[in-house]
Length: 115
Length: 114
Picture 1: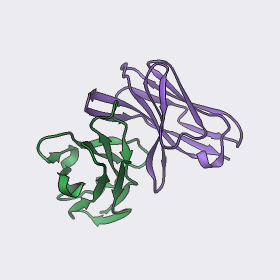
Picture 2: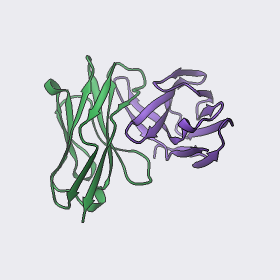
Picture 3: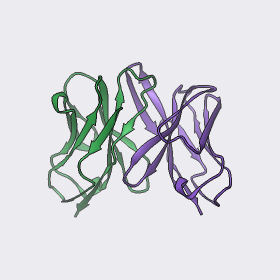
């Protein structure tokens, strides 16, 4: 069965600090990988996605993620966070051969950025 | 927003009462999903639909049923609500081609069962 693990439950950073959120998945086949962001009181928004090709993907708002197949990882990074990045971040996976692309989510990481 | 609306947005109900949540989409997407979001669990799939009258169970389907009689509407029913079903419920649709689907989410329904 597929599973997704996010290493950090709650991360607290000061503005301008660098961010890296860990995500590991468990699945024997080919996967698509996603990061979603949920700002307080809002719905999930797609931050970035990996289907194939260059393992370093860039998303909105200066975020990027790197797919390392040998480590089953898809870590999210941002060089310099802002107060407005305060949100909950979810890593998600679906199997490439899954009809319709239903997702398996990690537990989420709450990011708090101090001004 | 992928044209997804959910209703109601907030609901408080009593244990044992039936509750129906509605997801409506305007762009004729084939695949629709219901998730619940709980602290420490991320989002978990309740039920999903491949098309009209074509539904299947997800990982946390006990106590829930769904119906899809029209492409645009996907209904989630709690037959007899329990306090453990207090949660935020999100509807989603899939966009893309085989092997490269991505999901977009509705605004959510916050359900409290007292």
